Image 1 (tube, rainbow, N blue to C red):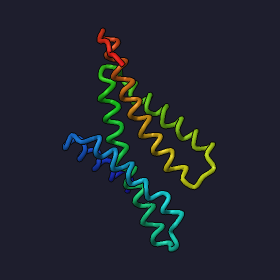
Image 2: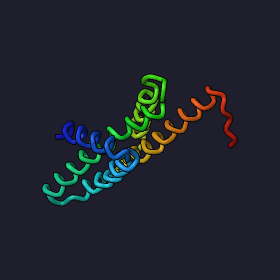
Image 3: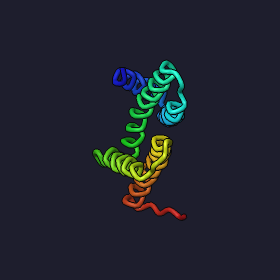
Image 4: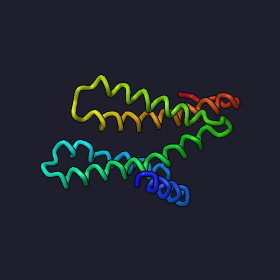
Length: 134
């Protein structure tokens, strides 16, 4: 189910050109993760688990498209940089002893994805001779 949804979400985000929208909606659906801990019946738990999987299917293709679009002529660097940051945020989650670990990791991943996009843009601009003032 997840890979079919990823395929459909990737096609829809590419056709609409709204990758950021799909990415943030996918991360927003992660609010269902803490709700899993509050579910008192198994049917609510199943719904929250499906919502989390749907969110992942929405955000992953859009996130990869955004990172690859930013990297421009550097083959794979955007994907690799994003993967390093996401893996780092997952490792940071090991140090949290809270029920909201996945939510913290997901918001960290959003911030790191944005940081990766900005870093690659700045790197490409500096490489081409542009100067940015901070």
